[in-house]
Image 1 (tube, rainbow, N blue to C red):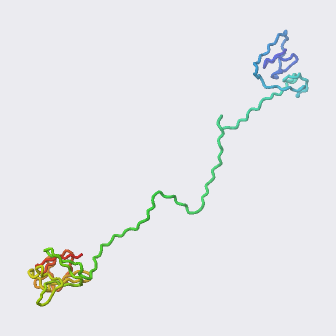
Image 2 (image 1 turned 180 degrees about the vertical axis):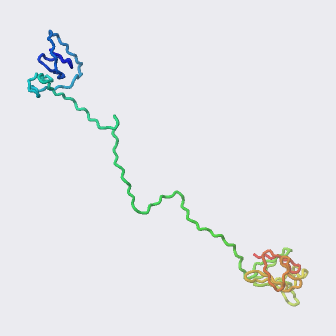
Image 3 (image 1 turned 90 degrees about the horizontal axis):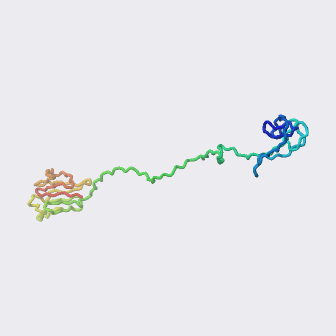
Amino acid sequence: MPFCPQCGVANPDSARFCDQCGAQLIPVPSKPASPSVQPVTPAGQVTGAPISAGPSSCPQCGAGIIPGEAFCDNCGAPLLTYSRPAPPVVPDLPFPGAPPQPVYPPPQPATIQAGTPTPAPSLKPSVPPTAPVAPSAPAAPPVRSSLAGIRLRLLSGAVLTLPTAAQAIIGRADPVSTFYPDIDVTAYGGLEHGVGRRHGRFIIQQGLVYYEDLDSTNGSFRNGIKLPPRQPQPLQHGDELRLGKLSLVIEIP
């Protein structure tokens, strides 16, 4: 019985090609038959793929074949069809064992509507603009129309108030000639200090206070300076006016 030189399977004497692998057989001298030892296959173990019965004649050369043979004894053509399970379809993955990644649609360009852009809200509190404040001009002195409110303070502390009129004469009363000035200083030592009966007068001119000496005998002095007679001189608050030797302080509110 010839043995296959490629796979070592024993073949029938008349076979020229191996029934297992189809290799050409080499004839060997016959030997006494000896019991052949079949390999023991564990239960449940499959040693090869299932083999389906082949045709009764060789599909290539047409020679008759023995049922169950894998290859034609005449031409060596394969006779049996092996059924193998189809391999599982594995999806193409970028890396073995990595799950497929989700597919996202491509980004679309943003559509900007024409118009005036809306400014972003500001976190700062809105403060209304303030107009620049112009420096205030110094208050102009009040325009006077009378002597009301003007006072004469004597060194003794006595206070004389000028009448509500545009002018007033200051001097001493004379009962003989029945002359009584608007401001009488007789009670304050007018005679002793050399104050005449018509010593001088206070007048309002253009809203200001003036004093005019009425050509008195002992004269009138403003802050120690003698005033020319019949020439009105302006007075200010705090001026010292001396009639002869009687001193008065002018208080103009």
